[in-house]
Length: 112
Length: 116
Image (cartoon, rainbow over the protein chains, first blue to last red):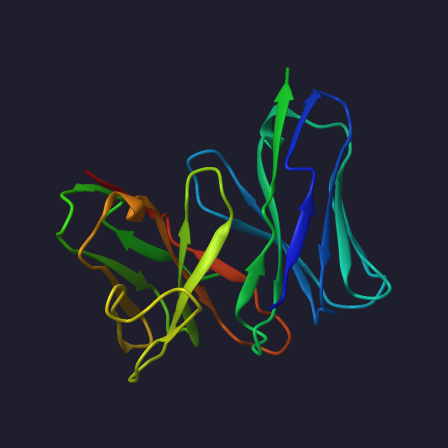
């Protein structure tokens, strides 16, 4: 079945440093979504990318969708302590455009 | 965006018993899902809750262990039956409103289950 791989599993940075997490799917995706889960919280939707090569920005966050629509990345510029949490990518699969397969997530910790 | 009320938020249960988790949405939604998230791990889809019919289960999950109800477009329940310590996990309700290509998922606060 479909697999969504995400690296790194953990990332610890000093406040102000940049951070990137990478996501790769075993199959071509119709879209890819990114979620953030704060410690003790539930996943919160950040963004959805649909088009090949798409780049979207949300303040210090930059999201990219690969040309082949099989990989994606999330880059955070100048991290802040509020960025702490686990970032998940997710793609639809299993024969449905609505059932999501989640990557294992990247846990980001930020040292103030 | 949908507002989801999930309860209980946490529970400690004896092995062999069952727990029913409720998920209430503030608006009618097309798709409702149940996920399991073990501590420090990713989300694993248990099943799709279908309104008015039997849920669709993912590989490794069966109806006898995780019966699901969805009587209408705003409400669903997940029961964890005959619990064992291996069922200790966070259970999350999720909804998607299928509108065009926008399939963002909204999650309930989760139910943190500990089986002793």
